[in-house]
Length: 88
Length: 202
Image (cartoon, rainbow over all chains, first blue to last red; front, side, top):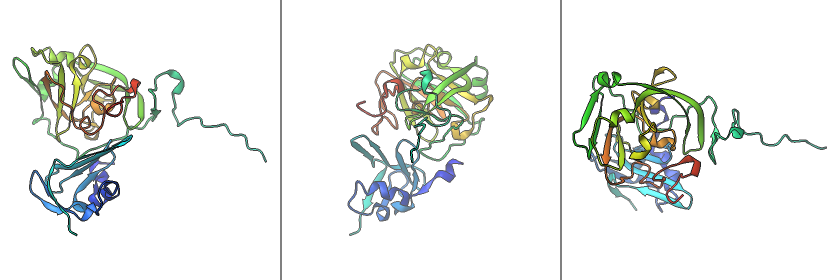
């Protein structure tokens, strides 16, 4: 299996992010901190088989979000995203 | 009706009695999982180089051809992934970090492996010298496949395998510890499988 075939779309991140956010993260307009791409998080690329989940920009593959769940902790790094636009 | 159960006998290839399996790990046998945090980089060998930079008197750089001319070592080692699989007696060939670091003068205490694709991992310098680590480009006598970190990866078999960074291109020496990609996201700074140092605080 190639790395590319293991890549998931951003909707695969929805389940894990539902543990953290009160809204559906997959529809949140997310702007990449590296290239400025703006797209729903569901259109981002997800790599979920590593020790943590890594979400990358579909335009430039910059890491916009990382999440790891360790015993008693959820670690969330959104340093690669400039903004999340959450529509009510 | 009475059933007699043989009980749980472990997964195929289980090697629990030899003392080779760290706590919480299982023997994956012939498998070799690929865990990826991103797309597989594919750097052409003519564009590949390896550098030692940071707190050194003079940075050094090897092209692929120069790297191939360095003294090689064959390594047979057990490897242990933090996701709980272990694989015994893996065979590699590459260049010892003793050879690479002999080329620089440094007073640093830590090394940060820097990789194509942006991955980083941090290690104490004392863990990668004296035969503790290699940059390997052959696995099972074949060129290391890209999905396993080829053309060349770090191999530090005595620590969890996330420390054995795929697609390594640089070793940056530092007097301060700088946690890398997983070490900043809840994983242990050192990662000794025999002390089961999976997560921060273990």
